[in-house]
Image 1: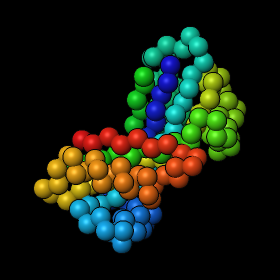
Image 2 (image 1 turned 90 degrees about the horizontal axis):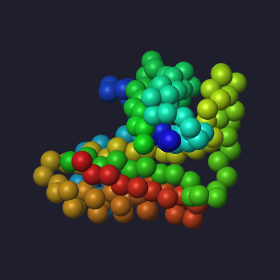
Image 3 (image 1 turned 180 degrees about the vertical axis):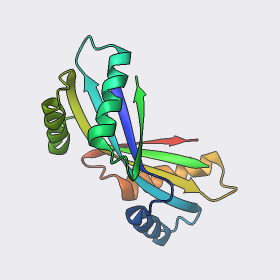
Length: 80
Length: 80
């Protein structure tokens, strides 16, 4: 059982790193972009025998407590 | 049109940051994980009127040239 956790800055929080990437990419000639935002991505690989529900619950808890800062960041969990 | 780019370390490349997160998470009492790997995540927001094919082509090019280091990292593009 695997879970993917995506952490992104909340709407309205400034993302200077994303802006810098957008600028670099424009200098390389890609002018069809409106915005680039940077986030974080984590792959959680669960031990054998862990159910999908347990995996989701653990991933949500870890996302909220460790991986994301809930003040400025949102997180999404996908279990597969 | 939006594209998501996920950048992950290639299989076999050491991920000390992921190992550190795994260790912290175990100290918090989550003992049902085999491994955590850290990656990067980017949201590319394209200008109006860009087609899905163009968005995918641009995102693949940016992923390869700017966002990932193809020597040690893999990247995946999802267009939506």
